[in-house]
Length: 300
Image (cartoon, rainbow, N blue to C red; front, side, top):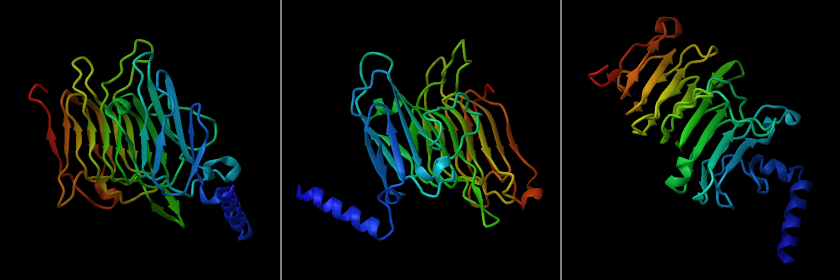
């Protein structure tokens, strides 16, 4: 009773000062079958899946300001997310994690090429408490600003950090954390399937390492598209991190900025096939050049 009284006093104090309790915790976390929780902007979020996972569990995380009723534009950031839980030994366990705008319920991208609406400014990364939980996960993230922490998941459907215009100046669009997918490519007679990593799109810079690690004999983990650039950004930093698709294929790497710099020489590695790497005309976007090592098997 005393604790409730203190909480009530604290809430009343916030309201009296003109600050709502909701405004203090604008980050919303929704989980299938669990109560919605609210968190402070930028705070780390430990998340536990309460029930043993034997089917599909969906997790959606977003800034409440991304809701149309609140203006539809995120203004807060999501800190590092750590998810724990138990994977069942029966059924078809799947954990879908979505960082996107709050409207429209849970809609996981059907295609990695489908643009997403942003759910936050910056994102501090995603990890799992066990490899078994990580390996049943698939992830899609869309932010207005930067992705600053590592994202370690089973499959990555789409990672989108295209940046934005603030006071006539382009800002954000950086992926500085490592992005890793551990699952094999998924092949389907119906959908055609998906690579372990679908699309990663940064508007300015990728300096983290992009990795697909599955050495599955039939369908090793691959990468569909890696894209760097945005129409509003005339001087993108470009690609500074390695792209390590150790066993699978890369469909394309396109950048409107340089690959590497005078001090950094990233490597693009495809174990099976590397179809296309393209650096757009650097002179038209503010200078730059090509400094990249290609590591592919001799059979290519």
